[in-house]
Amino acid sequence: MKELNQKLAVVQTELKAKKSSYNSFGKYYFRKSEDILEAIKPFLVKHGVTVTINEEIIINDFTQVPMIKSTATFSDGENAIHATAIVGVDLNQKGMQTAQQFGAASTYGKKYALGNLLLIDDTEDADSGVKPSGAVDKIKAAAKPAITPAQLAKAKEYVAAGGKIEAIESKYKLTNEQKANITKA
Image (tube, rainbow, N blue to C red):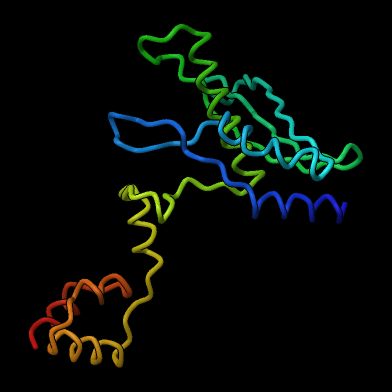
């Protein structure tokens, strides 16, 4: 099993799945499950592994909508590593027939199961030229450290000498009071 983990780690670090589709309404590129599957093919023979996806429909008394459980499996023929994604089927999707509603959920499930298995995230590539979504900006802002009193004093000196408050804001989480304190110099 240790060898399989090492092979998966190599694939996870070397795999590059391009975002080949464009959403003209949202003005962003996105990755489909087909992009991931195409990108992984060169690794399969090279490392003696397979990647498969199995799906199961989940309908029970607890859920209001049918669910699709997609399981992506990375295997060397003896051992296997699995990752799962569960998505709901929107039966109220306007303009879609039932088969299309299940197909859309299946596509999402496959994409996210593969993404979980291969550690693919949907954050924007730094060199793509496309600005990340507002949700990504909020996550990055929440991850910024609060500014300490010593750093606040240095920030005040920096802005007083002609530096930009935006540079401080890109590095630290600032309250409105701290911003006012820094810029009143």
